[in-house]
Image (cartoon, rainbow, N blue to C red; front, side, top):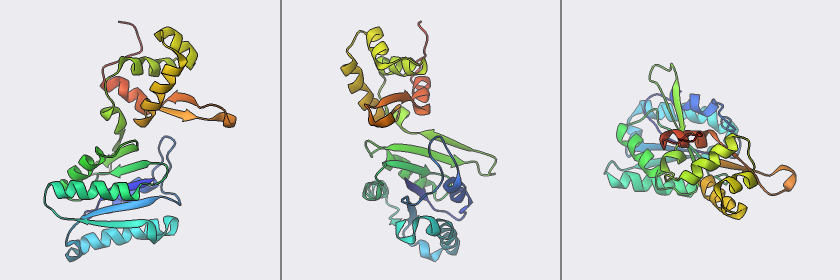
Length: 225
């Protein structure tokens, strides 16, 4: 997992995210990488340095200091976005999973980080942000918002939620199982479904929480009109 986050004066939000458990994604583990985004000249602000050091103290024993990347970006509009985008691509982990913690730091850096993530293809992105009083947080996958509207995709997700097989879904939609398999590969790029391979056999797919969110934001449901 690659954890991306702008750094401000308070490290608590980021540390909370690093230890948080999610659907099939635990907190920080060996093999993960941190990408901390700071404005150029951040060393003149002691509070930011203190925040980075606190994060390193938590993360280094788990992932090693070599896996903590500090990215300084110029505060010059599009160069912020392009710089963050390239750094994300350069530091992607093999699982192509990104956790974007957008709870602190300068607002232009938060916006630029989100825009940069829109330019990264074939990844699973979880976007999180804590409330300032630490009373809670939001956690949403970016994929459902980027995925195109597609009634067939919605019906496939509904089929999985109804515990139907790929063959059953293909019959109901009047297409071949091979066509459904091709659709599933595209859907998986947005995290709407997940492939599982029990006993090394052909992958069996299931709908994810991101798939359920896709139905909601696209105005689809699992009932006939």
